[in-house]
Amino acid sequence: MSQDQKIKPWVQELAGIIGQARDQHELEVLLEGLLTPSELEGLHLRWHLLRQLRKGCTQREISRNLGVSLGKIARGSRLLKYGSEDFSQLFERLNPDLQ
Image 1 (cartoon, rainbow, N blue to C red):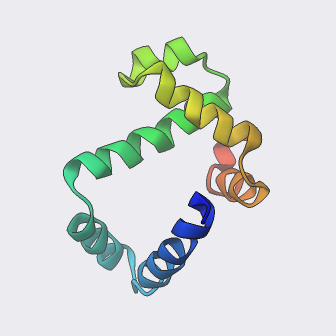
Image 2: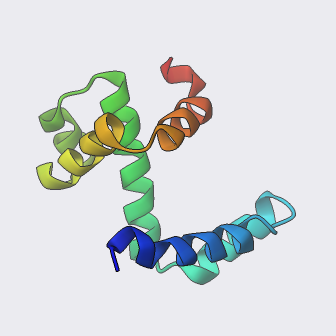
Image 3: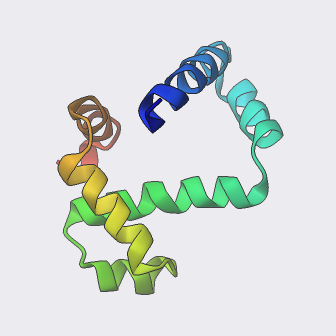
């Protein structure tokens, strides 16, 4: 079984659960309950490094600005370049200020 096949049911289940949050407050409560502070920080940093990559910042600038490793930034860069078209479209929609 490939990694994608293994995680697909997890993603589907979690998306269904998260999608049931009725408002911003419930979503915040859910995220704080499910994720550790470290996991929240990791997601937050990943989102911001993707935004900085999209703005055209260099990997070294991002590393200096966010205090993350070049390896994590390279992963984000690969996601934007070679990741799913669905993710790219959603990322662009959620970040209209970067267009």
